[in-house]
Image (cartoon, rainbow, N blue to C red; front, side, top):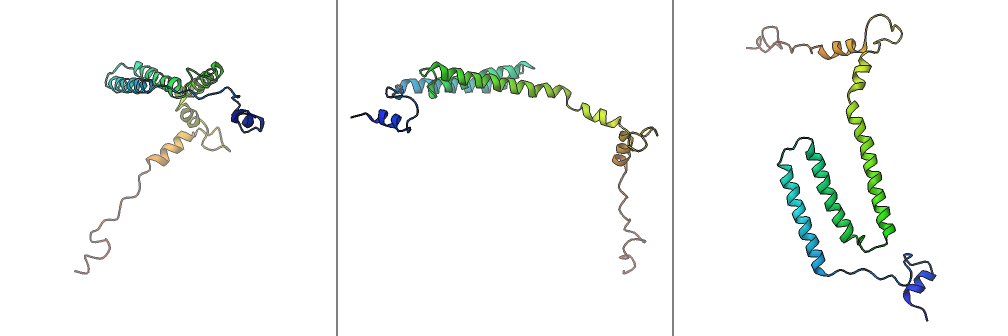
Length: 163
């Protein structure tokens, strides 16, 4: 007679852990200590938001948030006691996330540059050398004031004549 884990693995219904896999159960004091650590780190996060350290504020906030995420991953996701390969996969995903965010941040130094380039292009593609630029056309359209509302006087809507 086979065990439930062997039967599940034999029929393809298991999770690939094998027959010797048992869930990892932690004592309640570990969860309470983790909760208290996360509370302390939350207080540190709030406290750090009130201190102006210039450009270092972002780095400090990211370090604190990464520490909190690490505590959650290690304890609540049981990565501390799981196979080291799972920890490697999780760490790799964080590294790639950092790379993707880094590439996105490269763009922030160049935002707004396209407007200057577009302003130097000719306003009329059929006559590129007539001296008119797209910026001139844009300024004329932008600074064109709407017509003033009609005066409500003697020449207005006729209400004066009805009196």
